[in-house]
Image (cartoon, helix red, strand yellow):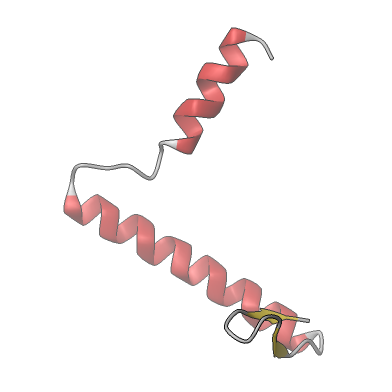
Length: 60
């Protein structure tokens, strides 16, 4: 992996680390909205929540 792409990747991975609490909250809310849209799309496709190990649930 090139050094430039490695630095970019590391930067992208740390993008959620914000010191400002209001920015943290807004990013978390954006992620939640995105996840809910994805879940609704999967539910509309006929997938259902199933337990895979007694604790963890996934849409299948």
